[in-house]
Every structure is written in C-alpha cells, then in structure tokens.
Image (cartoon, rainbow, N blue to C red; front, side, top):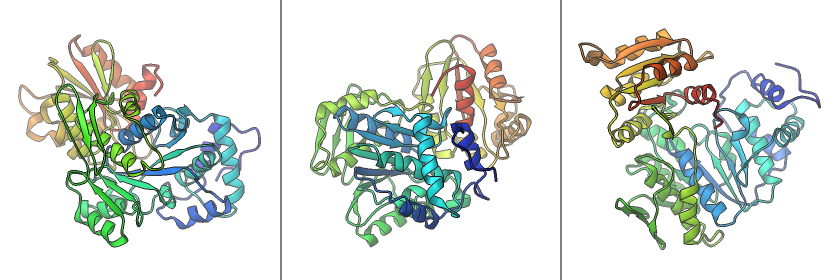
Length: 434
C-alpha cells in the first residue's frame, strides 16, 4: 500500500493511493461501506434515484438528469466508469466536479475510515455521495456499478429504483443465468417505494423479490409504455400521459425504452418533483452520453459505442443496420479478457468487413494478436473464403484507429467498440474530451 497522500497531493496522487488500499479491486459487500458512511453521518436529503441494469443505465441517468435540470431542479449525478477523467463520475448541476472538490471529500473519507479497508470503488462512491450531501440539491441520481445487492450504491434507500435490463455480464460475481442476475439487481428495490423495471421480459426472480419485500413495482408494458411514429412519440404511465414528444438526442434502438423508464421514475415521485411537459421535451433533446452510439462528424464516419457484452452488441448491431448505406464497415475493436468475446463478435456477425484488433493495457487487457486469434475463432466459418473479413492486430487503440482511417474510404464507417478503454483511447487519440 502507498503512503497516505499529504496536503499537497494532486487528484492523480489520491487515485493512485486508492488503487493500493484494498487487496482486491472488487470485494462485494456492504458492511465496510455502511460502517464508514455511519462515521461520516452521511445523509442525502434530496429525492434519490438508484439506477441499475445490465445495459441502458447510463442513458436513463443522462435523461433523468437533463429533464430534472430543464425543470429547474438542482441535480447530482454519479456514474461509472469514466472515459477520460475521473471527475466525469460526479456532476453537480451539470458541472463536472473539480479536483479540489473531490480531494476534500477523499480527505474526509480517509479520516473517517480508520482501519476499515475500502476498495477504490467503495471509497470514491462514499466521497461523491458526501459531496452531494454537502451540496444544496433537489435530486440525486446514483448509477449502480456492479449488480445491485452488494454494490456500494445500495447503502442508499432510494425513493425510486430503476432496473433497466437484465442480461449476462459479470457472471463471476452475479451468477450465470438471468434469474440469478435479476435477483442481484432487484435488491436495489425498497419496501413501499417505486421500483421501475423497463426490461420487457423481466426474470421471475426480480418479480418475486419485489413482491416479497412489498415494493411498488412498475413494469414496462403493464404500468408504463410508449408508442410512436417517425415524427414523435408518446409516453403512457399509470396516471400521466406525455404526448407529442420529440425523439431523444441519444441515438439508438433502445432509447425510447430508456426514456420511458426515466419518465416512469419521474411520474412515481411527481408529488415531490413535479415536471412540466416542456421540461420533458427540452431534457430529452439536451441529454448527452459520450460513447453510447455516439457519431462523430466528418468523413469517414466514426461511431463510438462501449458495448462489451452480447446484449449491448446486439443493440449496436441493430443500430448499425438502421443507418444508411456504407460500402464498408471497419471495426476498431478492443476487449478485456474476462468478457464474453465470442458472444459479442457473434452478434455483429458479417456486418464488419475489416477488424482492427487493438491491445488494451492492464492485467485484464488482451494483446492485439491474442484478440485477433479469438475474433477469428468466434467468427468460425465466416472467417474463411473470398468474402471473409480481414483481421489485423495492433499494439494499441491509437495504432488501430490510424490504420482504419488510412484504409477507410470516404463513404465508409468506422465503429469503435468492445470496452470503455477502447472508446476512451480513440477519444484521446482524436484529442477530444468525453
């Protein structure tokens, strides 16, 4: 373990220290986090939303934040992981937290924890919650990092909890079936409080847990829904209907599902946080989320998507299919070795004409050649024959992107996916912030 940072330490010094604090990067459980939260007398006075799910969490959080801000409310938003800078994880009234704000909270958590060991995620979650607790806020939105039941965010008894989707990811920690994973995620629900589930086919385990604890369960298709045509769409809830809405600024096939979850959540707390129709319209247009089917202007087109599990890859494939014609699709692809690579590659199928396999750093990263070999295995018969896609290995994302841009024609598209690290690497290579 590194020595405790002194008063002159930078945010980077603190983050390096936090990475060294605990023997394991992930240590599921709430006892240690709760103990330190009690020492900090941590209390969120705002209306709280906790958002979990396999995919769609970030989009739902972004739309909730944008709509509430458009309605004039003061909002804190906690998300993870970040793309470029750690500060992206904490936003107060739309502004990313400053280094000084975060360091002050790190110092407070460090002073309070004593001999209690915290993981990087646990420590930083407590620090950001304390930042929100000390800010005059009307609403706080907290995104679950991993699962739900044992995630540090789950020390909060949310006024409204949302599970966006349930699919296979993080099986080492959450189980290897939708039923097991659904039960883990359902534990963010609370007795008597709104529990939103926007998965169209929720696992029975989630339904059973909500019933067992007496949560106020809102199901997509039963308690809320959406309809639409090419010009506009409408939300229908238990008692609220929102008509003539413009499509969300966030692109992609599942965004109306995510928007509906956000509107159901707002309907559930409407007595405490009333939101006018114009704020809904404005918020949906203003919501932004880097790295989720984000299209960068210019030629050739570059599409950024952090898709790193089969469910997200299937959505990415659908979104690519919905785009206009492009002669060739180039993929800058980098993935971690503990993810379902075959499942992800299988969902994209023959849509990719040229694969640029990029090595990712760290113990979980695959090298370019290792990735190339595994992509070839995953493609199976599709990797053979005259129409087979090309596969090339590169040391890192920067090299893979340079090769893709050199080969791509003006009308082609380059899709960057497989990991937050892959998208972040391309943003940095292009000199863009998240």
